[in-house]
Image 1 (tube, rainbow, N blue to C red):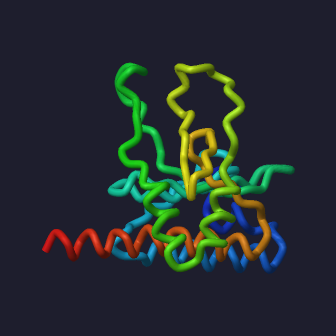
Image 2 (image 1 turned 180 degrees about the horizontal axis):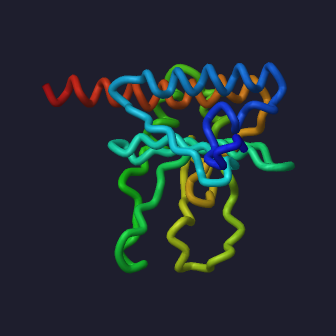
Length: 178
């Protein structure tokens, strides 16, 4: 953490290996330059999590950099304003995005499908985060619909490929609305 006590993007990634540092800088610039999907970067108060939110799409990309935990996830976030019975997703285009990807690269779509953070039923049947997805006749019960990635450099490319698909779908949506 910097001397001011307020974490910055640079201070969060400063001690990472050179290749990971470069990957984070690259994805940060790339995410914040996308259009029509627009991501806003947020850094938690302890500098252990960097979140990119595309609020119009309801999409979140989170990077966890704390101690021994270094992962990143993509998910269609849950709106939790109001009473719990009113909570829900602004959008959940996971199946549509996976199907879109599968049209050009079925193997990659299945790789993503296998990357879901599996639900272990921690909150029972009333859990607002339990989500069932299907792809090519297979089903998975995912916790919050999160795609989970490790810190392998190739998985940053996977994140970009997924978000590129979301962006392409958004472009098509804009063209259909014109």
